[in-house]
Structure formats: structure tokens, C-alpha cells
Length: 167
Length: 61
View 1 (cartoon, each protein chain N blue to C red):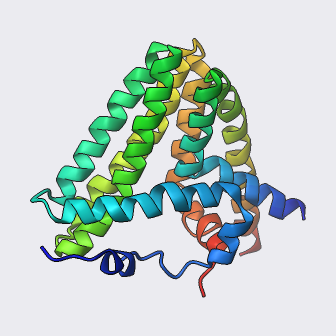
View 2: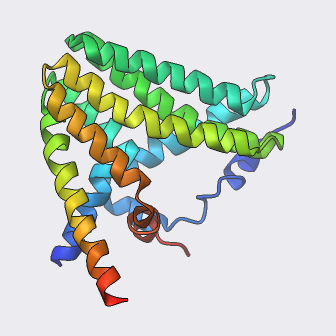
């Protein structure tokens, strides 16, 4: 499949963000560097393989589960390894949507898988870290409330989109 | 001003990429024990603020 980096960048639905906002914010810069820039090149590689977007989503979810298991050990080195695996999950999570658009394989099932992995993995991270650091109650509270914040429909259109703004 | 600050904190705390960035930094510092403490307290508070806000909006209708 003949895919160029610029084509991948153009297929990103977030290409219209107001990037002047990003320059003001260190965390958004980190986001733009880690997830966006790296994922473009990873997508370019994946586009040349027979890997489907759904396979990528499932692989990312499995990596995240391994990351959570590493967090649950409570070991310093395993904790760092877990955090890196969770970052890889975030990059793959960004890759699968772009890959689906490029390969023309967007589907309702893929969208559902993409949503469900994010909604399952994020609370699980808190539970795993809580278990690993003997603070299971606080970890579970964080997990419950991040789920509540994610599923509340009012959340959807409030902060993130307004924050980034569109040109 | 206060509302903007709450919105910024809210955005920072609940966005997945921010969460995993904070976790990576704390993991490198060897202080993963702070993660449940930080998020276990702030997330319920933020949810509560959001809940109050949505109730106020419903009352205005």
C-alpha cells in the first residue's frame, strides 16, 4: 500500500487544532510529541503490513493489561515498564483510528472496540496501582470516578474540545 | 478566573494522556503510591463539581 507521511497527517481529524494553545502548555506539548508525532510514523509502518485496525486495538489493549499487571506487582522497575507499556497503548490507540481511515476499514465494531478499551483500561490502571501500593480502596475510588467522568454525557462536549478550539 | 482554573484542573485530571504522563513521571520518581492518593481525592471532587454544575444548568432550563 502506497501511503505517505503527509497523507497520514492529513487524515488526522485533529489536524485543525489551534496549535498556539499547545505551545503554552507543557502537557499538551508532551501529548503532541508522544502521541501525535510518533503515532504518524507507526501508522506509516503499520500501513505497509497486513495488520488490521481491530488487531491493533486488541494488541494495544493486551499491552495495557500487561502494563496493569506490572503495576500490580508494586516493584519500582516493573512500575516504569508498566508506564512505558501504557504509553505504547496510547500511541497504538491513536494509530488504529488513522489506520482505519487510510485503509478504508472504518467500522462500527472497530469504533466500539476503540471506545471500550479506553473505558476499561483507564480505570484498571488505577485499580492496579492501588493494588500494587496497598491502597486498593483509593485506587478503586479513582477508577469509579474516572469512569463516571468518562460516561457522563455532559463531559463529552465541555472541556477538551473547547480547550483546543478550532480554527 | 476560578471557573477557568477548575476547568483546567478538570481537563488535566481526566484526560487519559495526562493521566499516563503523570503516572510515568511518578513511576520514574518511584512514587507510584501517590497516584491513588492524588486521583482518589481529586476525581471525586471534580465529579462533584461537575454534578453541581449540571444540576444548576438543569434548574436554569
